[in-house]
Length: 334
Image (tube, rainbow, N blue to C red; front, top):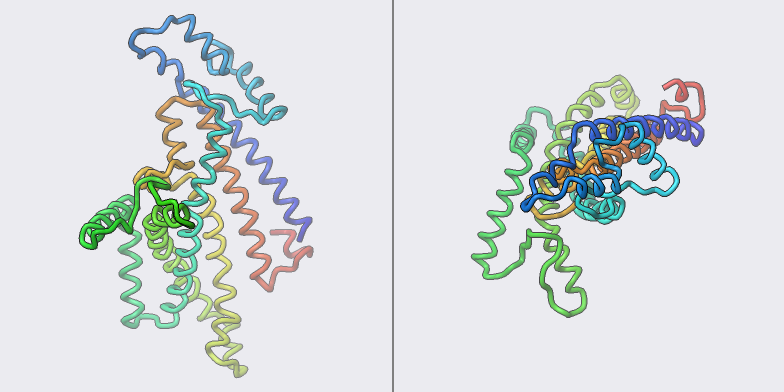
């Protein structure tokens, strides 16, 4: 298994390098940092603008291949992702915002996936009953409503509840706010700010994974190995858990690995609405701010997340699927 994962890691690493370089080529040719200075009032001396852009390796008057060589050397030898047009180290900004995104999406993603799997598994065993139809309707409703609408509705509800109760139990602007000096005040304050984003992500995740899990679970319940296990006298509940659920979790875990990976840079709506300055918010601002280096670093981080999601999916498949022979020819051909 180790050799197989190492081989896959090498393949993914090559793809990541190619994708990052293509992202730089796209950003360097389509974004225009010079435009940020040309609209300044009072006007800035063109020579000063050019010197400023050259010092940050952003001048469009320097040949493209020369800028690429400088950018590549800075990353390879110094792990320096460059500077934004207005100043500021991109690497430091990325490092700070990564942990903001981790705090924002981790709990909501895990809860959403777990609840969705439980609901999907349960409704699959009760196909076409009232409970199945009820949860199907709720899941489709959650999938059809945009994420920013759900987040906004939760904010409206929280504001109403705070007004009725006369408290500030729900906090939904930024990561932290004013808190007391008593023990645990900072932790409680942070949890209050995380509550609504976590609920929103849980709702979206549960709706998505419940539909996936229900469909794959129905296929597993109707498969030959489950019927054979039942014919041999295995109780229905044990046949469901030991055989049907285990196999049905394979595609669900694959979806989960990739969805969590893309959430790091894809939760822009949640971050903007709840004022969490994470990677999704940063990705939007780099495009708006003509920030070549920031946009490339965000794309590279997104590619790294997908790479880790792919490795996680490979590991989950190897762990869950009894038909996979680790280190054998069957697995190696996949």
